[in-house]
Length: 393
Image (cartoon, rainbow, N blue to C red; front, top):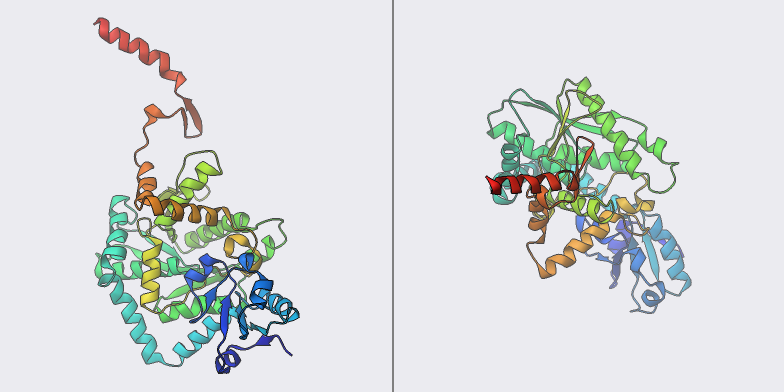
């Protein structure tokens, strides 16, 4: 008996069944096949599943590879188990095919997505977006911005927000919507471009070989991949005569980075709302979603029935930090820590964020500025002498 079934075969099976998505919880929250339940592979007990109710089990992973291995193991334990070919990505592409076949529906969905930014989620999305632009002076007259789209929910929303700003704002800047293909597989690349088409984002794409370069790296390739992608984006943006690149990091990314630097890096630093590039003079990086909560991005996505890939990396299933099944990444650990802290203090995220705006240097043992380390003992005795001098006066 074959352990692989197509989506259509699964749906035609009239019997009661379980559809189990074995991706990470974080991946499942970002998008899943309707009716699926989430049991991450790292938490799944094959023996317990095989001894459960006698119903067929359909397994879904990201691309349909890891689910095959598990289905084979469960079959050996006497469980009727099938791997859903193509996994979640296959289901996503089928949804896009259906949307493409009905252009009228696609047009209405685009309009709904745009209206919901300005109306339904004005307080959660449009308000924090424009506040970040004003507070941190992210966009200035005459800017030409490369809006960098990876294909996930964050960068796609950022693109729509900037589009809406061009439509309803002063329109005193220009935007180029840029998609870099670092070597996506065909399915993921199509998912990125089809979502851009659905949302009416006029993307420009360019190809690099980053995935081929980092594939042979030991351990997680994500750090090297991220650095290389940033460099290629800056180069392409400068070629297009842009002076800024915009990335889709949001509020949750900021506070997670802050805690990661403390707990794993032994230093206090955060993700800045904008940065001058050190390697590309005259270029800046801006983060327009800086004040937007990830939960609100997810609500906007779900409200509009949109489905974005979590990570278009072709190494996704083996890379923990991209939602794979190895031990979770440090960022995933921090997400879980914050979730636990919120149970006791619902305002903990805001407190972490505000702490980076309220650093008291008088109560810091040492700090760095422009690469130079300053220690409180450098001025400690001088301050005392100054106090004594003042008292004598």
